[in-house]
Length: 148
Length: 148
DNA sequence: GGTGAAATGAGTACCCC
DNA sequence: GGGGTACTCATTTCACC
Image (cartoon, rainbow over all chains, first blue to last red; front, side):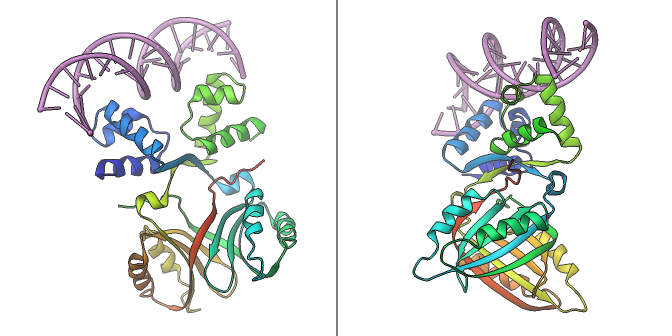
């Protein structure tokens, strides 16, 4: 992971579908050299996935909500983590420090679909407390974690 | 945005670097037809960006933190939104309902770099209250918002 | 939306430093 | 060991049906 590898990753963060020939030009390397470095970044697991960022509003996902959950101390909700993975509208889920156990981010269509999801979540065994809030405006939603 | 367009998006969510020839086979369409649909999804803004998901640990981003911020009611912190965009380690920022004004997600190296960022954030004009927590385990971190 | 030809891009083998 | 060059094969794009 030297400076050239980082340059490759930064270029692909901006446009993962760029061609090897454009990429190699951007990092001032020959095509085979760039291709070989990219292959190594993929096989070593530095690159987990190539994906596409969609405009939520254009696919009818107009409501983002955040939620904290606390479970009984006897069952710290390991089951919840498994359940959360089955809900396509739960896009982020973290086990956290503090008063609650889990934090989730929900991206859904509208209040009706949110209500439906919340009622499913509140059926989870051992759930003792939740806290909800709604996103009014999306300032930053960045998947690029590599900066300099 | 018919069923075929959604099939294109779902395929690209899984692998944004897949070739047009593979994509066209996956959706049972000819190559030029698939290419033309993809071009329209790009120009219409449904597809905002193609990007790469990196393994945070492999690029020394071992610490994720969440933070809530409240600003003085006179200045509701519009400046903060602008400032947040300049901090590469602030990967998500939402203007929210409830007791606080903003919610941010920070992905950083370690406690030292987090401390450094927090001290910069706490310099923001009008900031009256913050609440922090640290992520212990990343259960779901999904950028794919299109489900069915 | 499908078919075929021209152009562009990717991968392999080999050479150099 | 890592990078450049030339050649071959795959892929994409354009004109046309």
